[in-house]
Length: 268
Ligand SMILES: [Zn+2]
Ligand SMILES: [Zn+2]
Image (cartoon, rainbow, N blue to C red; front, side, top):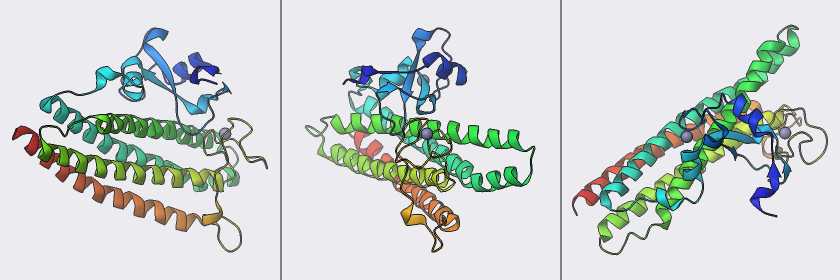
């Protein structure tokens, strides 16, 4: 089975996203300019649910796939590429923080809706926000992953060992930061699972190992259960905050490493 063996209602995805690339904001007037990019761990076979697809423009799709034209060549281009990657990763931290904030508000939002009939519209909006923020955050992480993979594939140690070392130090820290961000996203998704909702499409979970609506495997919550078997939201939220804090500290290291790389590249 190849990656082409899945299908989806792409037009519905494009319309939902106002025919706008969710990474760079480019508006695509015709269908040729837009692509539906799969995010999350949903299986790419058969009909893929819209909650696992996000609209991107052809350029961003090129960044996300194996487009050799996106590979930087030469010291100056390399430095611009690294600086741009740092900038995008910095924005990704904010995107992750927003998603965490939407996710951690969900238990309260659900409770309010249950207590107060007529709050359905507000709850629908919270759920829509969760889905949208989740897609955006997974896309942002995928873009940075793709850029870092491209840097890792560069053979940049031949002539300038000092710059190559600095590039490696940068890549290492950026990769650590990616793992930290992925962890915050997974913890935030666990909030949905703790509410017996699918962490992707947010539909109510039945008893099976995967979601009936979108097919995502149900996330494991055993680590977060309190003694009475309910989900320990307080402990989960505290951990999310800790991890976000740690990610900010890593960003400072990353900035230093970007500066070092700039100095070594311009010293050539
Ligand atoms: Zn784009
Ligand atoms: Zn689902």
